[in-house]
Length: 149
Image (cartoon, rainbow, N blue to C red; front, side, top):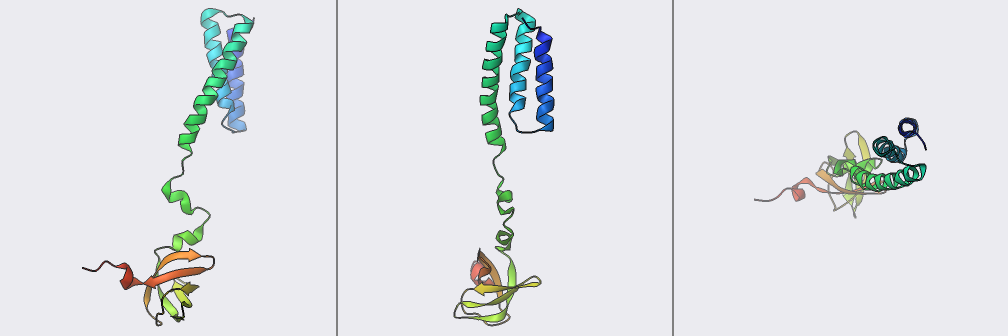
């Protein structure tokens, strides 16, 4: 029969291991060990009962942890452009710097010139970026994006 405090020490060591090598699973096994320590301290269990409680408590806490982390890891809508910098260009306003003819030309967005696709537009037309495809921006005139009264 193991004393209850040995389960408490195991729980503490697993908790420390989780902090030094995070993988989000050792903490749930540590919770199983802590529950086993608490049950053994109250009921003075046999070693077989202690091991069964450890297995059941760890399994149950891992199951609960799976669903807890599943909800925590949901991506925020703002995080969708992470590592996709071109997506940040959508909605950016600029100006045509080389007229768009036959659907192709160049636009200036900030201090950068981009290859552009869109309707035929003369140089100097204000545009807004609709989408990005590879290294080209799809644009439309600013007037087309504003609602008409």
